[in-house]
Length: 280
Image 1 (cartoon, one colour):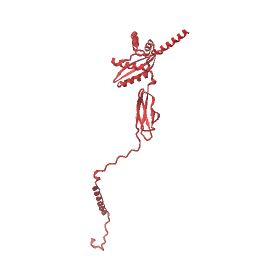
Image 2: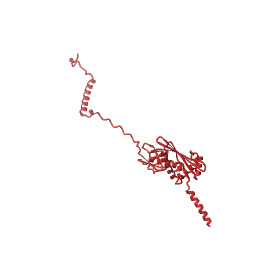
Image 3: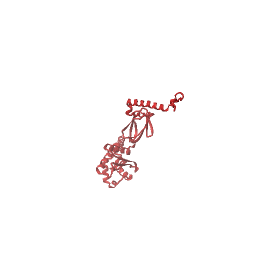
Image 4: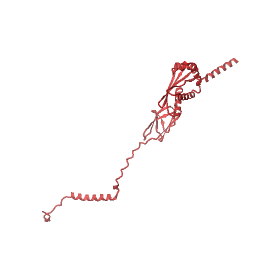
């Protein structure tokens, strides 16, 4: 009985040790054209985020450095799955991450590889461009780490509001409901196309960016397609506003009528017998 209890305790201890043993290793990011200080900063940032994603099961940096110092041939590994698998087996992990970072203008380009140690094959590869201020850089690093180790978690949410009730909402070409609409969760991080349609209103269409583990908001004011108002009447010339102008116009009209009437009246008939003096 004592032997059985001891055996069970040994099995439980071995299982506990296996559960706490690091299952992931990260080699230093190889700098391409970066100075040592910036390369070290990005390396530390990636290490912290990858350790967060791996829930603390990451081989400590001193252990990795000690192995590479002990076996110089392994230091020449440039990302090939075969040599990375060898390093992974030496460290006793199931997966290993290698990458490099290069400066490109005002941004950085990071390339990461995840290798399955047992099979000696590349499991996943991620390339990310990092740019912007410190907060944007940290977010980009977090996205890259999750894309590599847990791509299913790279999600965000989108909240769409409008001043028109019942507007049809189309997201990436697919109808998702009508306003008011609850936030749309579990969307892939990146750019999405949003369109709102409602009878009597011009359609609205725009690109929106969904960010990692955040809820982006889009507030839409639709424009009515009601009748276009006629242009305002032109202001009359100032001289037409005077009453004396209209009096003069009326008098001129009367005079013109008299002249025209006389011009158009027929010649009178002269009776020479009755008025011989008017006959030549």
